[in-house]
Length: 187
Length: 66
Image (cartoon, chains in turn blue, yellow):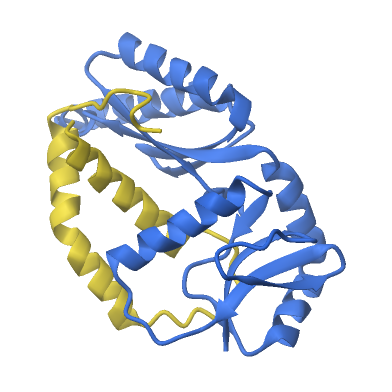
C-alpha cells in the first residue's frame, strides 16, 4: 500500500522522502503507507512537507489518508484523470490558497429573521469584494471562504482584507495561510 | 488575538482542508472513522476557543497571519 500526498507536473522535485510515480507528464508524490496514529502533530508535519514542496513546484494536495494498492494503481489514476489534473495544475500555478473567516456577525444574525437575511447578504458582499482581487474563490460557508491568490499579489490581497475590515468595524476578518491549494484541487 | 489563538484558528483551517479538501481518489480513503473522531476530539477545546475569539470580535495583526 502506498499513500498519495500530492499531484504535480513531472519531473517532480525530490523532497521529504517522497518518491514520484510518473505518467504522461504528471507525477504522484507518494510514500509507503505505514501504520500510524492520526494526531495533530502528524497533520502539521503533512502541512510542513507540502509547504516546502509548493515552494518548488505547482501541486495539488491529495485528500489526507488516501492510499492505493501499488504504483501501477497510482499511474492508472493519473492516466484516468489526466485532463482534469493538468487543468487544475495550470489554474493553481504560482498561486497559494488564503483562508478568510469573518467573525462578529453571529450575534446580529441571531436577533431576528430580517437581521439574518441582512447579515447573509453582507457576508456575500464581503466574499465578492475579495473574490474580485483573487484568481479563483470558493465559498466554504457563509462566513468562511477560500481564495486562490498569485504569490506576488498576496500583499495586495491582505491590504484589501484590511481595508474591508476597516470599513466594517463591527466585523473581524481573520486570514490564514498561505495554504497549498486544498480547496482548488478539484474543478 | 494571541499567537496561541491564531494557531488554533490555523489548526481548524488545516483540519478542514486536510480532511475536506484536496484531490479525491474515489473509494480509497483509509483514514478510519475512529482516527477522524480522535482528531476532532483533540480539536474540541480548540474549536471552543476559536468560537469564543470570534464572538469577541478579536482580530490578529494582519501579516502576522502569514
